[in-house]
Image 1 (spheres, one colour):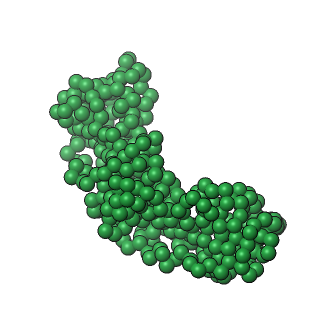
Image 2 (cartoon, rainbow, N blue to C red):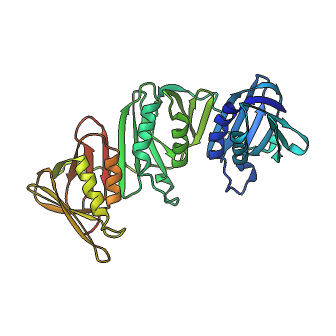
Image 3 (cartoon, helix red, strand yellow):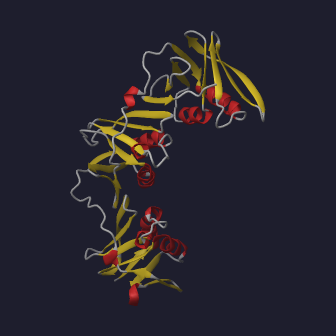
Length: 365
């Protein structure tokens, strides 16, 4: 195997490959990237951790067919630091690779390509074109509330529901929930929702970053996303997502409308006096609400916030981090806070122009 390739072209595939390759796995091969030259003047560049896989078809010159696997991170670091715009890679004895650019020559340990695990085939998947910006926005607005507790694997990803015209993403960690709805014409038509794991979503964000459009397909048990000649395959979580609609409160007894910027700043100031076990206290009344926090080791803070409030006076406690993360994902100048009782979840939503909902479970105060 031998090929000549532009450094920028090779780096484009290796940048994503080295972030997917699993250097912590008990299988050393998973830390490698598979390089295979086909008869079409293409270099197939593949990386996988068995749950997320990348297949990139890169343009090469003077290719001789064959295959090899090399440590993904070390190869990426070598390539980006080579001089000039072009390099040559050749397979030599004992599955070593010889890499040359200008006056620089590397010899790198490799492994045979026949031992590389098989990655999911995307060629028969029912791809459709969707707007990459919309998809990235939906991921951004749900990814932060994914559960990181690996024992609750049914919550370790984002639920995707789609009917070909609209799409919904939902995530929860049991303490807060975020839900976003968007028009996604041409998207997949799913009979049931699928759960996309967190690492897969992080890699999807990388592959669609800066793209205007992408191609999306769901072929159980995988979701595929393709931009140009890069295709990502993500193994879906085989579990039942909880009935999230039951968590979203309805029929609110109390509601407040507040300036989003004032609310975020007030919560951030109160957070300085809070702790993991002591949240911030919101006391609602006729002229708005008061944000307060106290910590025996630090001190206390109190701030009055102007707001339009309807309902009987009440006080409720929240984790300030959860409130700030939700408010950061909202773009409207004003937000609504819908409340039941002091032990009921609170609902935060943009007042106008955005179909986005956040739910936060209260803390005892």
